[in-house]
Image (cartoon, rainbow, N blue to C red; front, side, top):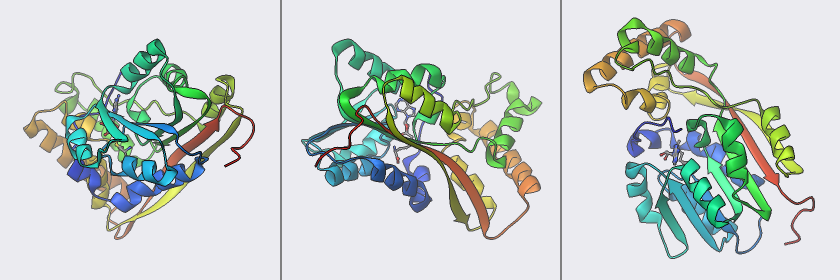
Length: 270
Ligand SMILES: C[S@@+](CC[C@H](N)C(=O)[O-])C[C@H]1O[C@@H](n2cnc3c(N)ncnc32)[C@H](O)[C@@H]1O
C-alpha cells in the first residue's frame, strides 16, 4: 500500500543539493557493467534517472513512478533508451514477476519508505533482479527525529485525527541489519548495507518545515482540505520550534540507510 501524497516537484526540488547527495552515494556503490537494463523505482522528476543511465552507460533505463506531477517533469528527460512508466511499484513488481521481466540493476532512491510492509516489499523488489544482477536502495531512516515525531503527535491530536480519518503516516523502514539478513536469505551474498548520518546545515529551524513539506507532509496534505492543512502546518511549525528552539543555522542530522547487494559472489570483470 502506498502512503505518499500527491507530489509537488518544485517543493521537492528545494534543498536539491542535500537531497541528491545520498543518490550519488548510492550510485557510487553500483558495479558498472556495460549495457545494463536498469529500473529506477520511484524515479521522481527523472533528471537523476537520466544521469544514472548516462553514467552507467546503461543499455536501457526505465523510471517507474505513480505521480502524474513527477512524471510530467520526467518527460523532459525521456529518450529512446530512457523511458518512464506510470505504475505503482508493488503492482509493477507483481506484473514483472508474472511475465518474467528482470533487470540487471534495480535502483531506488528515497522512494521505498513510502510503501508499507517491507517484509512483503523486499522480496518483491529483489525478485526484479536478474540472476547476476544488482540491487541498490536508499531510504531515509530518521523517523525518530523531532521533524517526524511532531507530525505524528499532531496527526493523533483531536483537531486533526478526525479530518485525517485516524491516519498517521507509518514508517516501514527497518534497521540496516534487518535488510542485510533478508537480502542474504533472498540470495544476495555480496552486499554493503550501511547507515549514514547526512549533516544537513539548514538556514534555520524554520527550514525544517520547508524540508518536510516536500516529503513527509505530502501524506497529510493529500488527506486534508486546504484550510485544515494550513492549520496543521501552523501547529506543526509551532510545536517543532518549541521542541527544537530557534537556531540559525539549524543542523539537521539526517539518518539514511543505503544498501547495495549482488546476486553473484564475484565482482564484475569490466
Ligand atoms: C522523494 S521522491 C524521490 C525521487 C527520485 N528517486 C530522487 O531521488 O529524486 C519519491 C518518489 O517516489 C514515488 N513513489 C512513492 N511511492 C510510490 C509507489 N508506491 N509507486 C510508484 N512511485 C512511488 C513518488 O511519486 C516520488 O516521485
